[in-house]
Image 1 (cartoon, rainbow, N blue to C red):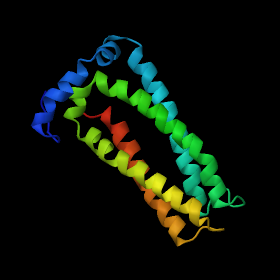
Image 2 (image 1 turned 135 degrees about the horizontal axis):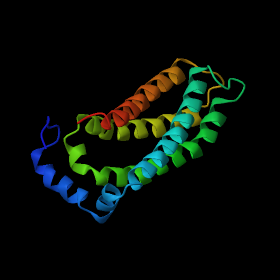
Image 3 (image 1 turned 90 degrees about the vertical axis):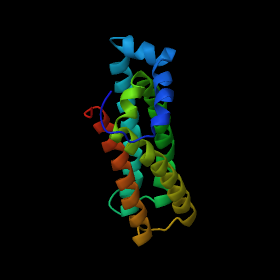
Image 4 (image 1 turned 120 degrees about the vertical axis):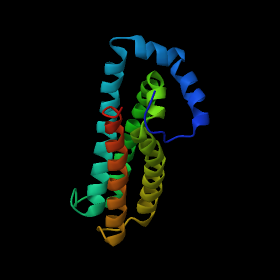
Length: 166
């Protein structure tokens, strides 16, 4: 495969082995597996995105303003966790079915780098907000929300762009 290389060349054999796993082969050779798994992956994105938006809009002071910030963040957390779990459970077989393509895909690497950053920031920021629990949005909660939205937008846009990149 040609294309720009983002990852070290030494990683290519590992990605080739991943693509030949039973799961990768099954998903790649099935007519229905990839689209069904992708659809469930998008449902996970909806759960995750909805939970992030709900909490971040409250942190910005523009949504659910009658609810305490800590309550909104706490109630959004199970949905966030469910979305993350669903996306990991479906993302892994999708990746295994085209690991070599992902190896050469810059968008894949942007997603893989930004995803742990977004997760770590979200859980650290949410914990901080739940502990601090300001009554109203302030500059700190707005900053956390803006950074969170930027990080998750990067993850989602890079993930979406994987399918459009060669």
